[in-house]
Image 1: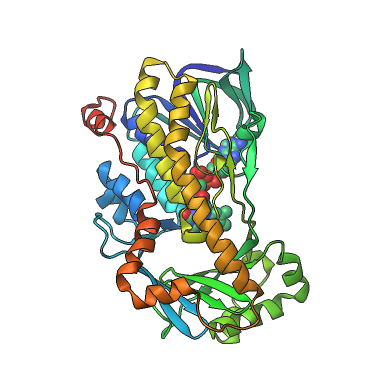
Image 2: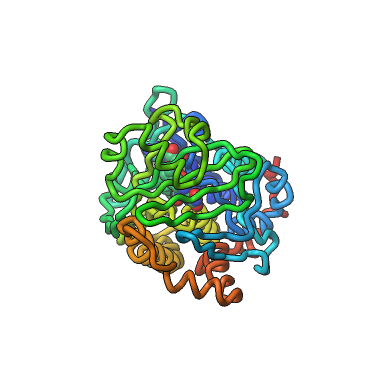
Amino acid sequence: MSVDSTLDCCIVGGGPAGLVLALVLARAGRSVMVLEKHADFLRDFRGDTIHPSTMEVMYELGLLDRFLQLPHQKVSELFGQFGDFRIPIADLSHLPVHAPYIALMPQWDFLNFIAGEARRHSGFELHMGAEATDIVEENGQVKAVQVQIEGKRREIRSTLTIAADGRESVLRRRAGLPVQDLGAPIDVLWFRLSRRPGDPQETMGKFMPGRIIVMLNRGNYWQCAFVIPKAGIEAIRAAGLIAFRETIASLLGFSPDRTAEIKSWDDVKLLTVKVDRLESWCKPGLLCIGDAAHAMSPIGGVGINLAVQDAVAAANILAAPLASGAVDLDVLRRVQKRREWPTRVTQRLQLVIQNYVIAPTLQARRFERPPLVARMLTGWPLLRRIPARLLALGVRPEHVSEAIRNASTQMAGVR
Ligand SMILES: Cc1cc2nc3c(=O)[nH]c(=O)nc-3n(C[C@H](O)[C@H](O)[C@H](O)COP(=O)(O)OP(=O)(O)OC[C@H]3O[C@@H](n4cnc5c(N)ncnc54)[C@H](O)[C@@H]3O)c2cc1C
């Protein structure tokens, strides 16, 4: 067992929350180690939507131009199809931001980019294939994490440990932080189908009585999210793959040869939807952010962006206390105080959509007409700017502090 005692911050989890926090803290001159249990970032269907709020952060860090050189698709308008009615839902093109659209990009490209930028700073260290198994507490304070790296058990000591290890967070469990389950009546099946000549351009949601599917235009393929009632996967599997393909083909109006691209259940990934939130995001020496603090519903595709916003707020609040080594519980609570309200509002909106639009659609046998709010969006184009703003920027957009922006340009440690 070896011991690192001079580290400012040990971050468990190399997802959007952990890596963005590491990047911003490293730019602020802090020493940061990220522990990621997987050997690479290659995970499919993990949320590929980069919203304007995240791209504003990239701009503030001077990275937006390089970021946009990565292959991506732009989505500036979102549509919903309710039975025979086509409803424009959100128009992002009017937003006063540097990138007024959602960039669809594989999450591993985003994470590789952030890790690559963070590596330019001498204070940053990333260990892949490093699985944290427990926290080490001394006198009621988290002092270290235990981790398996290349088959060896190590203990990483730091001034502050961050749990950014996602919605199944080991650290929050080991720390005994109580979780409030907010309930989710749905699960989601993800799969791909090719895009072919004559297909529509736009990214859209299709609502039919008893069925909902969201299709993201990924260039040469559609990334499809088929929404099912909670735990409905067993019944779908029992009915068989052929029946599943037929359902999808009739819902999308695609020919059977296209849905035959779903060759086995291995091509269909289940997302068990969870919406939860920690009552307290911290204890002495430990702070949870991102999904580890609040698992989000996939509605609106805001999980990555909320995680990034948590990371920016945490970096703004923690950079100076970490420099002086004085990170007490009050400082950690300031991060929760800053981010809890936007989390609550976003989760509340997701629950309203889940319970009043999605669940009734899945139970419906026929449609009279689209929901009232959808009809209002059709009639009043200006109204579409509200969902656009909520989706794009969230309810409390975070900005990299001036202190960190200036510190990063003065930093001697940039490689
Ligand atoms: C199938 C699916 C589809 C989704 N679709 C979207 C979408 O379209 N848009 C969107 O914005 N959001 C989407 N989300 C949600 C989004 O992925 C999350 O909200 C977001 O990734 C949260 O970021 P995070 O960094 O907090 O956690 P995560 O992205 O979950 O990252 C946690 C990281 O910690 C690592 N880790 C876990 N345990 C340990 C450990 N013990 N030791 C070391 N490392 C560990 C994991 O390997 C992972 O890399 C989706 C989620 C899923 C599961």
